[in-house]
Amino acid sequence: MEQTTESVKNILGLQLPTDPRWVDLTILSIEEILTDHAYCEQKAATTCISLIQRYSQYEKMVVELSPIVTEEWGHFRAVLAELHKRGLRLGKQRKDLYVNELIAFQRKGGHIEDRFLDQMLTMALIEARSCERFKRLSEGLDDAYLRTFYRKFMESEAGHYTLFINLSEYYLPKAQVRKRWKEWLEFEKELIQRIEIRGDRIH
Image (tube, rainbow, N blue to C red; front, side, top):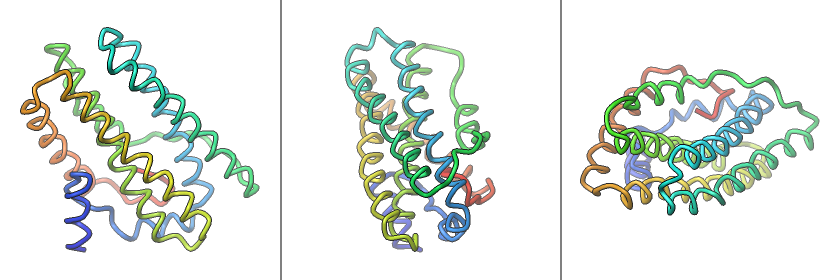
């Protein structure tokens, strides 16, 4: 566990790895985990669209997030196809306690730069945790095809995580971004410790 913790910190900055029992639970809930994954990809695409609409004055961000919208929607389609291939159905979207807690931690007032930074770091954190979860699935699932399936998602999410950090540092001082990022990581660590481990959820 200690080695895994250090690996997560070094690669993604996350302060706490996912409990290994999570993968064991997902094996019992493949339809549910694929359903939740599909909606996660859909929400990632729509959130990028929302960021582009809200901060259209940030040209570099608009240019760099535009292809991410296409990529995330392609991921949604890929997960949906996997469900159908297995004779499974896309279930109903459920509340995402993890993401809702992150949104509640965002600064809502003050300067636009503060709100922008928190929204970008929220996305970076979601992508980082998703990457870590996909790595778990790529290593721990019994299904060899799904292990490869999630390896590809893991590699994609790692790139997205760094993109949101880099864009934040493009528009704001690096020291400011890093200070707030540290606060986010500490909050996320506490969040992971207290929320229920669910095998039917990506987060």
